Length: 353
Image 1 (cartoon, rainbow, N blue to C red):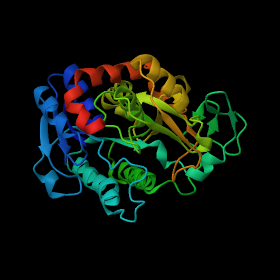
Image 2: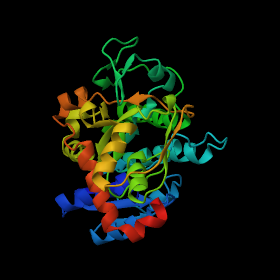
Image 3: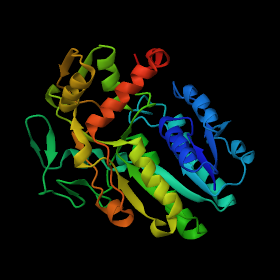
């Protein structure tokens, strides 16, 4: 099999590429990336050492696809992934990458009759609707209840039939628009496609920032003993997310690559679920225990733009259709990332500290 992974030097793309090459040494894997994100340059040597072909290119440029060979499958893992992207009044890069870039990827896949696996986001679900959901405030977190004002949500989390009316951030909108185009290519061009709406993806080699990659950021701040803050929702740190280890995501993508007929045209939520969820307050406790360090955490009651109180993925559909469910919990994720920081301290300090 020949596979193109866009965003291939990013955290998710490179992790998927290396796992695929490790498990299927005979596969030819090509990773396309423009290296815009700080730290992605570190992955080029990792890809090369694994026997993967790195191609410097940009999905915004149709011409950059012309030199690529024919492949059997495209994994579209490229994106400007920040929820805050474009909110400073300049959404051009965001839209050109996340929407028009996807069109270029689709046309390339169509040209070679390649299967198309798209990594979308839970951020396609509207902010205001999520913020009006019924919840209980527990000692260390916010939790969803079963009694809800809209369909597609329960104490297990948010499902694929959650209402899509309303604003969701420019980032979420570009991903949803891409989803709609993908469905058109599936229906009218016969392209085999699968859309995965991922929750928070994390793991070693993620270059975490405040607006994307918060798990790594949180651990790194403990590791280097720097200040953090509980922002919004009263400054209590009870806002909650589910965490999906990239190795668990890989198991799903691996299954989809080899069984796409069974899920062709589907949209699937894929996240850590309730079992692998944490509030910031709970994450802080785990970080203290794993790193052995306690750091100052300021409390800022005001809620920030585009933030949400909680998001948990309901994996019921993807588990029913594929048998997949996440296996790696929050504590193991913290332990693995801490070990990665130990092993790559000098290279990562200028990026993460």
